[in-house]
Length: 157
Image (cartoon, rainbow, N blue to C red):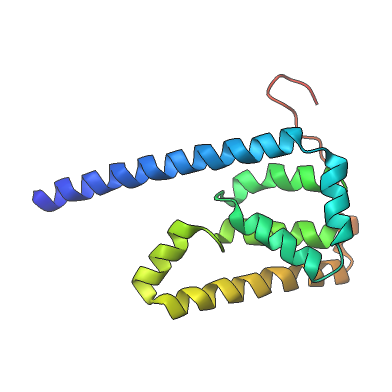
């Protein structure tokens, strides 16, 4: 019975901690997306848009988001709509659900498998996401992307 109570306490603690983290980071990302002009985001990514530096920026941005792939899609649509290069957007898409720089995930990885395995995970997924974005662009798949408009909560398109 004590183990069940202890498990329940940890479940509640971790759920609250992750919920707060999700809300805070989601709010910060929302503020950045709302108030950062699309032209500025586009100019920064175009300035560093050459592979592999631009792809690495896409991976870093995606790796910092604590979202699953379902939450990543609207951000991806926004990036593509403001003119972010296809290869960078694909590196972002691949990196986002992997949690490359998610401190909780990396901490758990380190505790379960050791620091070296966690470091190998970070390096391997980083290189794979950068490479995948470059390869998908090289294969000419950018022309397969359809223009999508995400409807806002107030009914505007």
